[in-house]
Length: 133
Image (cartoon, rainbow, N blue to C red):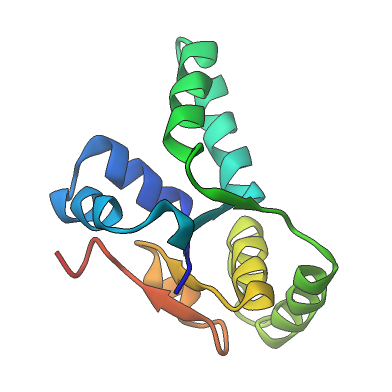
């Protein structure tokens, strides 16, 4: 099984809070972990807001280096349109929608601490490693 990590899971793992997230991540093979290009963009944006953006970006590069980075592609775009339409009366955030679309297009399980938001996306498999530890 390949897990697609949401941005908040990587932040939890780096901070070590809750401790179960880091432990669970360390038990996985890097080949079974992926991050989306959207998550990478969010991490870079967070680094830019900080005091030492270059240092922060380099630190995040080291964290995500072992994992596959999956880009938003044509298949994800099709899922995006469908999900956006289905949730049009109660939408989720645009970046969350992009991440969910990538997970569905690649048949991945999304690992997030924002399970309530993502659980509204039909057929999306969601796990919350922070809640289970």
